[in-house]
Length: 486
Image: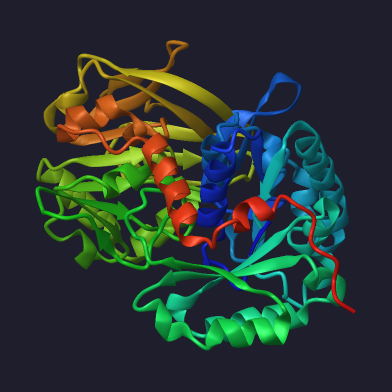
């Protein structure tokens, strides 16, 4: 199990790397995270033949493990809708009753479902690589926290504790976390990991040695800073506001508060000549080539925020100048004329009016793996997509159709059932397909080059941990812990 001293310490990254490392040993491997909080989700096989959704981090971890992703790998997914409320997804499906329940009242019920999923994965695999959440030493939450040490105890997991040394205070974080855990939980921690180290590792002395003398736990790896690994960050938005080299194409993704599924833009970050940046103010949209409105977990609220920041005028001016605007899922819905919400799921709101479409929110969420195709009518700045095919997924409550009183938008994308899922009007394109940029044919059409395949990314991650962990440590984690000294 990979635990962290803080959120963002590198748990997801290391879990993914370990999934591939153990899979390369010829073992059957699966990832597991009892509960994730993220609006980045993927559509995977669920229960009773239905589709469900899990956090994107566990989806990529499953691919790294050479396993088929399924809902057991992330049995509880919390999708934040506002600062004080999240939609609760249990084994891939929204649970309305638990969504309404107070947090402490629902944790025991959620743990029961998560424990069943964990036991099933342990029975089906040689190795389960478990990811924790936040810190295991949040003493105010410890009694109801089933994601960290309760999961570790249930699996009798060999635990690594990771700290981000680039932030400073890593030794204190490791020692304090270790000491705040009860003795029987501390006994599961087999090694400390210093992540994102820059500089001369010899300068760390006597830190690791002193830490081991105080805790009995060795520092088993010092992982150097590695920004170009190619794996999407779990939370999508990075601290750095722009990435990529060169300036052939500047792409701005509007970063509203409840944006979702940003991991699908990772391929753009890897392309030379493409500069990807997050836009929160009008200044962030000056002189960009593309504007992308991504998915959103709260479309009406994010649309109101976009107007408060005066980004709506910038987007309209960009389109009026004939420059490309792309809306995906919630972004598509914002580009239309109106949002209609008869069930109180999201909210009613006027749209940006750049596509003559109307979206109505339905009670049931649509989850679908989608094979889509662009038609021959794709024109203007998006003409390179004409006749292209792409695989991806759909997650949305909204159903979008032509506005009855306005000139028609041009249908330009269809799913494998023949339903229209994308429209164009001038330089503005909107569609429901998440994952379009993960298709090599699409990237080649738009940018004349594909990106590094995920298989190469996963192999690189496994090589990285193989190089930087002390010899024998990773294999040793598969054996029971030695008896504790008196």
